[in-house]
Length: 81
Image 1: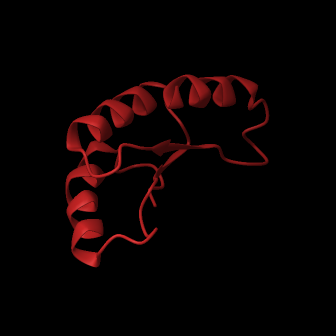
Image 2: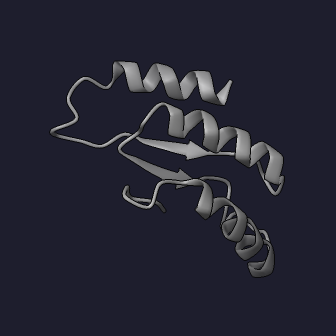
């Protein structure tokens, strides 16, 4: 559902000159789910990407673990946060 919602938002986003629409990579702490989410979103070619579901109460070690395997899945030439 998250990927379908992202696709709908991207289609509805008609004026990229005035704002950017970021795809939000989801999947909690599961690498396979994050990989699928990143794959789907990168295929839609968003102007930038967010790594969602972090800094919401998990430990710093868990946050860094997720960032370590998720960040390389995203294009380096676009904003990532």
